Image (cartoon, rainbow, N blue to C red; front, side):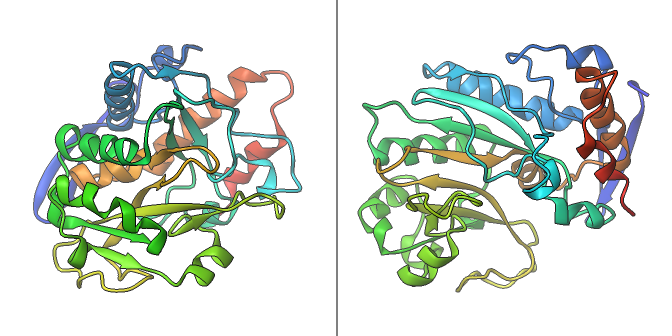
Length: 291
């Protein structure tokens, strides 16, 4: 299975990609992340780690995808759950939303996915942090400036010059939400609040969106039309923890148009989970069997 390859057709072009990694890749080693369940995502994680290690960030280990707390998200690690990183650190975190498991047949939904978290150091400004992640997406991943949209509130006004410096057009590419609406939602597009923690302090953010369908209508309001996907969020001040998170499979989709195959990823997910608890596998495992 490790050598199996598949060809994905999208928009008339054939994209060949190795579908899975050798089991030996999944050794406990945070530098070789051992989390990605397909080769393209693994290579993207390696690109992220290399890029930010060269800028002084330290990679720390991820939290288990199965939490054991079945009172929240069925015992699975929710992508918006705070993980244990400090300023100047990064982590590659596997996550799942329980409501997405029933949609695993939809190629636009990933029941298991990864968030690449970066916490900017204490001496870094919001301007420098935002510029850093945009530089990575544009100049390393190779995404196109004209396919971006940014969703935020007027709290972002002071950072508009950063977008201009990176070659964006804030007038056409920034969507401003009502502050009260964004605070209430806490969904990362303007403000973020950790779910399951009603006493948590919300903090201002900007959501990064990318047009993956060239026929999609322009993004003029929130929510964005079909053909646009959210690829990440960044905090925009030092009130809680300056930094950003990127959905790596979504960044990979924006880059190549390729969505990993779920059935093959499921096999390696079970290998990963069962290896960590071979005698008594965690109860969250069977959730992925849902039809």
